[in-house]
Amino acid sequence: MEQNNPSRKPTRLSCFSYSNTGYYFLTVCARNKEKLFGTIVGGGALDAPSVQLSKIGKTLERYIESTNRIPCVIVDKYVIMPNHFHMILAIEHNETQSLTSRANEKVLHVIGTIKRFCNRDLGENVFQRGYHDHVIRGEKDYQKIWSYIDDNPRRWKEDCMYVD
Image (cartoon, rainbow, N blue to C red; front, side, top):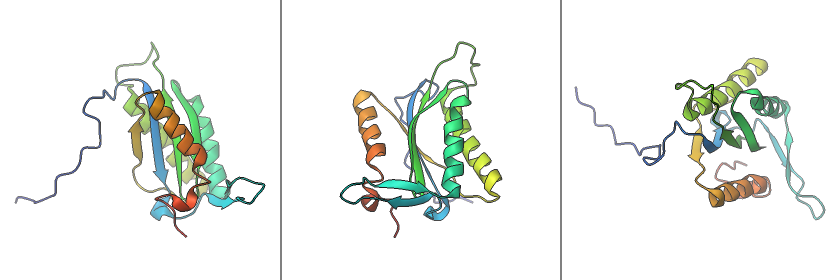
């Protein structure tokens, strides 16, 4: 029986080898985009908006920061928002890496590890399935994403993931 499924837009860059080392911008959402990770506080005349992490958000932060213990992986920058988090992940080359230990597998490993250990510690699944990734293509792209992460708490109400 033939199915008429709509064609899907490719999610990978055709001109990029995902086996390469490099920088990746990752976004992971809370289940149903619920505000599980914290709340935005501040924003008055004297204080910039920031995220006050919930218990779940603090658990998430602990595992994001521990990611740097994974060989060839560096969390370069991150922000935890009320219902999602962003991070810049650097995947480095290691002479002892096997051919199967490619950058895309490292990204999958990092996201899977963070989700698995958070869910285990919290006793529930707090994440949506999947994640969004973007290959950072050069210094200008990197700086734009770095600024986006820095500004995310200040621009929360303008964020496409904002829920009241």
